Every structure is written in C-alpha cells, then in structure tokens.
Length: 334
Image 1 (cartoon, rainbow, N blue to C red):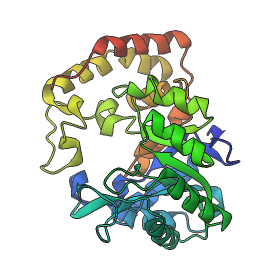
Image 2 (image 1 turned 45 degrees about the vertical axis):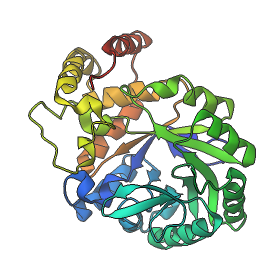
Image 3 (image 1 turned 90 degrees about the vertical axis):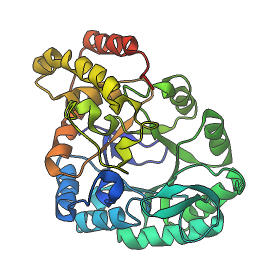
Image 4 (image 1 turned 120 degrees about the vertical axis):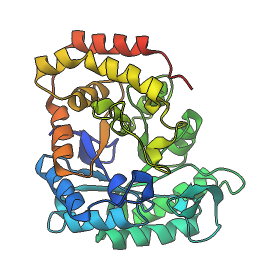
C-alpha cells in the first residue's frame, strides 16, 4: 500500500484510509452494525496495508473509537489513529448544529470542551496519544470561538504529547487560511467525489498552497458509485442516505443516470481487471491535490476491495475519458 506524508507532520499514512463512521452504528445507517464484523473489517484493513484509521466521538457516541481500540490491540504502533473534536452533546455549550442519532448536537471548539473530548477519546481509543486530532466542523455563531483560541488549545495538547498533529475538517477556503495562519495544521478533511467536485475549484488548490494533506470522504457516495445500489433499492425512513439534500444523485430519476454512466465503464473494469469501486477510487486518488481517500466499510471484504484501488494504474488517456464522461453528466434534478 502506497503511503504519503500527512502534510509536514512527519507521519506517513496509507493513501486509502479506513473511514469508521458507519461502524459506530445507529439508525442513520438503517440498522445496528455487527460489531464483530466491524472488528474483522478493521483488522482486514491493517492486513491489506491500510494504516490510517479515521473516526470521531460522534460516530456512535464513542462506539466507533472503542471498536478501533479492540481491533488494534497489540498493533497500536502499526496505525495512524485519527479522531476529532468539536461535536458536543453533553450540554448546550457551543452553537446548535442538528439532531443526530437521538441526541442534540452542538458545534463547540471551546478550549474547555476540547479538553474534555480529548481525554474521552484517549480513553475510548485505549491509547496514550492521538496521531491526528482534527476539528470536526468549524465554529459558527452565536458562539463562534476564535480560531486562535481553538488552535492554542490544540497546540497545548500537542505540547503535552496527547496529540501528535493537528488537522481540520469541512472548512471553507477562507477558513483554511485562518487555521493555517493560527497554527501548525497539517491536513484538511472534506467531502469530495466524482459527483461532488466543487472542491476542485477552491478547496483543493487552497490546500496545495498551504502544503496540506487532503483526506476526502464520501468518495463512493455512500455506495452509489459501486454500482451496487440498484433502482429497486429503498432506504429506510431516517436513514442518512435518504436525505435528498445530501444525496440528490440517489433520487430514483438521478440514480438511473448514474447507473447508466457506471455501466459504460464496464469495459474499463474488464481492461484493468477491477471493480467499479476500485476504478472510482483510483480516479479520485489521481486528481490534483488529493493525497488520501477515506473508504468506509462495515465488512471485511468491502475494505479488501477498496484497498486494492491504491495499486491500480490507469492510463492518462482512460483517466481523461472518465473525466469527460463526468463533465457531461451535468447536475442532478432536484
């Protein structure tokens, strides 16, 4: 598995990372996760050369972190543990964000809540240090903690050895500038896929300007780009993927267009002896500025499949043809 540095942190991480949101479970994923299978999936990722494990306290209210701790027992030094702070549910500190999985969530990047969160994550991950600690979402009014205050708290944790590197998630271009000016951030995590390409205009170039590694999420569009979500698939009420605002391409009329697009790439899959998921992730990794792609998995065979995309060598001509198809796709109907 190819590895690339996470900015200037001195930490090298596999270009495919394990995204641990779904293993946290909850109604948003259409039912409870199988914890034993989740542990097997994490261990399969390690065996496939994936060393980057990305999680957050909000993924099952610590459950995802605890599963990772169980899975990496005895192998802690093999992995880059990445988790987050900034989504808060203990009380009303911070700015109200949204209801999620049975709780009311606030965005809080206050130093006092960060101090509580990091200790919880250290405990739940069963470790004495977090390799990469990321702000989950930027602070917003009415309680918009200054970036300088947040970064000072994170730098303090770094000085104590509790975290080794600082990252951020879901920032605007101007927020990337502000974070980079306030302290030593090394990466930015954000949504990016064949169907969500807005970051090509501003986020990816801004990350390159600041020498930030990039961790992309939802790059398989929650399974749509694997070709395995057919026209007959129905999402349960309350399931995250049923949110048309987040996933307009999953609406039936739009889904048909994506399935037709993917069908047209079957000759490429045959040429490279790969699956659609592998083809899609290989294209994503090849885009300018993309350094690491997070792939979610709840089953071992899924992560083994996506891990293989890191070694898939596609010609520049075929990459260009895929991009041409995507450019012609247009926008989803609302």
